[in-house]
Image 1 (spheres, chains in turn yellow, cyan):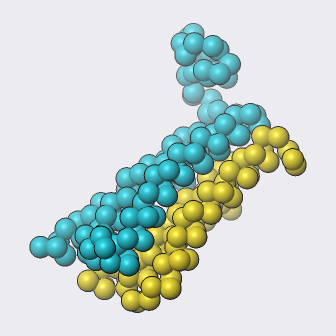
Image 2 (spheres, one colour):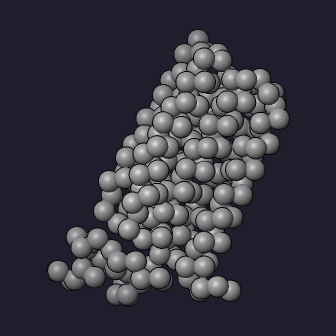
Image 3 (cartoon, rainbow over the protein chains, first blue to last red):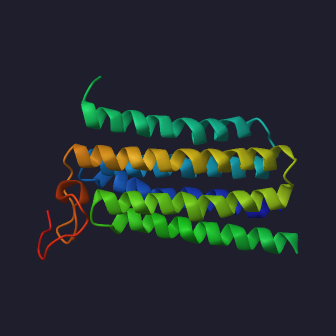
Length: 86
Length: 117
């Protein structure tokens, strides 16, 4: 089933191109953060499926890191928007 | 049979992810876009992770990592979406001009006619 995994990973990255448009053209900072958050989720999934395609278990840790710590970035950004620098 | 299930789940997930990305691109204000990004995770990412679990089995290294990523996304994505929406509202990002209600400002959720913010 390796070709299915590769196709899924490449399609994820192709969908991410749409989010790059919103990241570049978002009117406010919040728009850009939403696009970036979604892009990081797509990147985690793409890395996971590429690991399953290539048969390399070391890429799985990259996917776990992206899935868990990208939300930390979103929460830090929203705290900055709400209260300013500390 | 198993490959058919995997392909069906992956196509469902990719279709919802594409619709969520188009929604993020086309929706008129920040709050609608936050809703679209939540849909991208809930209906787009989870079927794809389930497809990986079905393909590799839940006790393999790939399947167990996919389950772990699914649990992480289910816990963390609503929290991040909530924090983003709250921060956007508090920092004064305007709603779409056709929005019909603004509950934190008006108290109970009933808007009068033409009371768009």
